[in-house]
Image 1 (cartoon, rainbow, N blue to C red):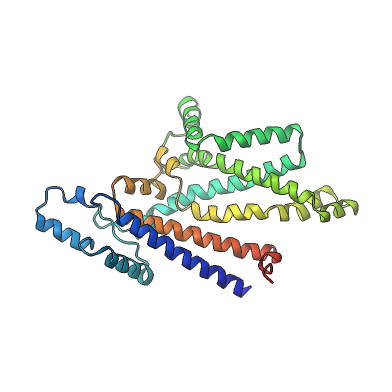
Image 2: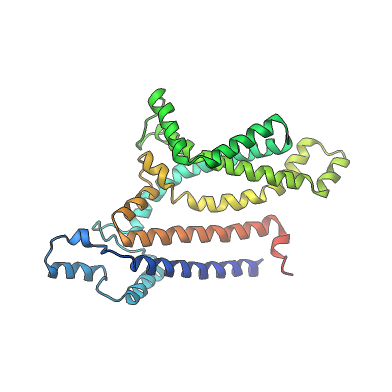
Length: 309
């Protein structure tokens, strides 16, 4: 098991190195001057001082070396080019918890409701409940999240005046973004849970349990759900990493001061340091989550980690 974990960690480090390197050189080589709007009509001498401050006067290879050195040794993602005194680290510390609060609540709803709907659909295959759930799942997956967000704003906020349209600070501000964020995820979990459950129900050990007179409740809880949940683990662990990044569209529509909306703002402002730093942060979260999935797989199903032998 230790060798299994070390191997996955090694692959993750290599992947992160490649992602960070590619991201840095792609953004550094993008057209446009990242501080053009900041220097404005400043004298050339003042512009040179600002470029020197952010290392823009150095060759891109030297800037890459400095960036990697600060990232590895000091865990420093860099300082904003547009906003004085703000670093990527401070933005992450301030805005990521906001995204996480919405994301955690939404993820809990997605897993619980999605797994229940998928299980109900599988146990009632080709019946009315199955058809209704499958139709709803297809509809929720095909319709973009901003459409559901607009509908929720119209009915719950404008027409019925149950919650605020947008904003942050009260528990009521959670309702619309959480619901809009959850709909697509619920559909995805329901779809995969239904397929996985149907696959497990055809296994020999399920038929054996039935022939031995195992009760329906025990068979579902002890035999079907544990094995059918493996694809759900695959989806949930990376989703835990994704909640810190937030949803760009949802946060923008509901004026939530999360990391997703700030990322969009950084791209619009051509704040290349912020864009690089936040992209690297998201990549680290995602790679770590994939490593966690592999480890959880090995714990849940020992066959996965001994497959090579």
